[in-house]
Amino acid sequence: MSEMHCCYLKTPAGYLRIRTDATAVCEVSFQEKPGISDPVLTPLLKKARQELTEYFAGTRQSFDLPLCPSGTAFQQRIWQVLQTIPYGTTISYQQEAEAAGSPHACRAVGGANGANPIVILIPCHRVVRKDGRLGGYSAGLKRKAFLLDLEQAHR
Image (cartoon, rainbow, N blue to C red):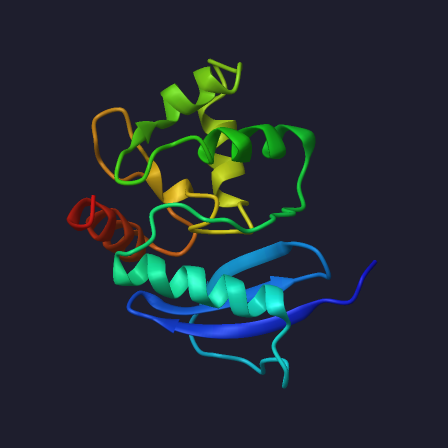
């Protein structure tokens, strides 16, 4: 396993922990407070911080970062579907399950979304209930609503 690098980014939605290995982003997660960042940021950490800063400023709608989320084959398939949801739009868990080829697996899709280790870059916040209500979000519904509102405002 390659060496991991870490930094924290203060955003309007809270602190983000960004973890990378030598080649890809492995984690972006909300934290209640910042931890200890690497003393020297790698080029990949700098790029991830920059792109996320631009996202929160409303000037970036897509990301150009290599990703390496760790998960099961099913989770990987679900996370691939998430990456196809356009900025500023939402789909239902049912639509996500159908797009992943598992139309009867809505609950499993929700579980895979909740296990997503790379929030925002893999936009699980863009999935809502069939009736339009927010549903769940591992970082809390206030953050999910904030991210959806941010994207709507800059769409």
